[in-house]
Image 1 (cartoon, rainbow, N blue to C red):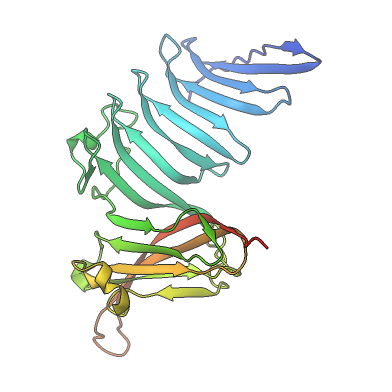
Image 2: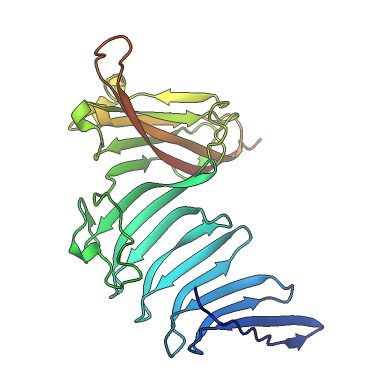
Length: 294
């Protein structure tokens, strides 16, 4: 924040030769701007930034974890605006929830860290009653100047259903089974299709997919090729349904990590002009495989 006067006050409380303390900074108006709270080891645990108003109204609160921040933004009426996590390189990950000034859930955004950056993977909009909307409406806008521009170019929900049919704990002789149904393809006009790419168990994708060129993968095709599973999706568009799974022959924690690939390839105008488009939707699932008792 610009044009601020910083006054740091250290409040020291002695207990068993350890020290807790906090640092305060103030606006030129003498309103509290920032409060940093440290533990006995001198580690920052919580950082609160305030609005420049009387009454010490929180604007942003950072809770410091081992390798990321848990963050909450607040409206001036005290209601939560949005919450989520980001790492110490300011890269968002996981689910970020957004709320209206009245406290209703309005939107969820899912982020993945991919290589050195983060990207928006999926988003969902909700009605006042909690129903998922295909399209965002007036309800899904945020009536405060600090947040009014925090909207996406796409006002459509990501109607991509990832279903995990297996339990989180399996036996070695039990299969892991899942499916993806893409109800909101971006390239439908191009007669696009989807496939699913999984990293192999012993040569998996890294969490940020930075090793994707070196990973061995399994490819699962949609129902145009997977005729065996058509019976389970009688009314589906075969282009946009993929069933996938895996068997495990060793016990322990397993990470199912991969992505849905939507793609199209146009008929070439000539041999040097082949037009192709694609997009990815990432996912991961942690399961545990129990060993066989002897």
